[in-house]
Image 1 (cartoon, rainbow, N blue to C red):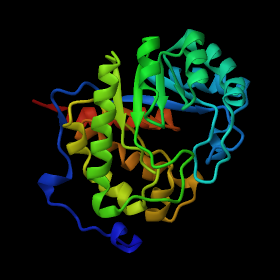
Image 2: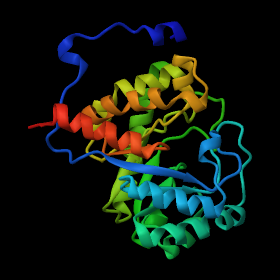
Image 3: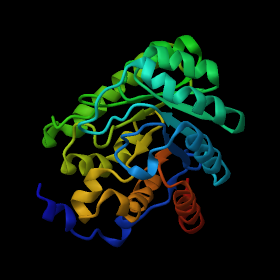
Image 4: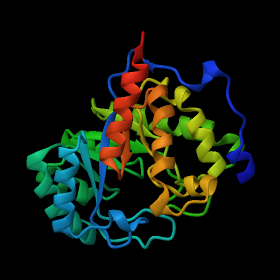
Length: 280
């Protein structure tokens, strides 16, 4: 699928444009992103430890349900860091934010997960989809993501099979996590991780199917490159594109939306609830 086709996919019928949120779903929750990294893909999310703590506290004040703290950039081309380097970055941030609200640690390293939970994190957000035994051992909540490679690579899934491949992987992750005793669990399709722009959009169009698998869904699309592929905008100008994707995610039943821009997203969700409400 070409970028031109993505930009002009055809206008849906009136009945297909928006539906209320499925009745079995609670309110969509907003997870704020705080990156204690010098090389995050967007300069607006690069913080020193001190800045990261203040940013996280402010996001909680603005309505974030949880703060996701990361110490390793997973953007395409990022240089992997050691667990020791990652822990040095995130430890003061997790400890600084945890007294004020719920904290998630965005990591694929076992020692970092252990240390972060000891410092007050209660969710392990795992881009590798392999740390569920650790979460089960620690009694932590768990997010299992689909990725082709971490950090994200230019290797991409075949567009024709992307939904089937991703959903089958996430079914396996959910089953394994449940077998490890995890009771608070989300799956994440890994938008931008080894998928083309067209593949990412195919996954977004299939969100109702993903949300029907029986495991709550976390979605991260904030300011990602496929938005730029469609709009032509640079990362600093992708707020509108990011907010536009909240509506179909909300309507599909996504439980948590992971974002850089908390206030704007909280307001978007509030308006969706006010206008369309929920359906039985």
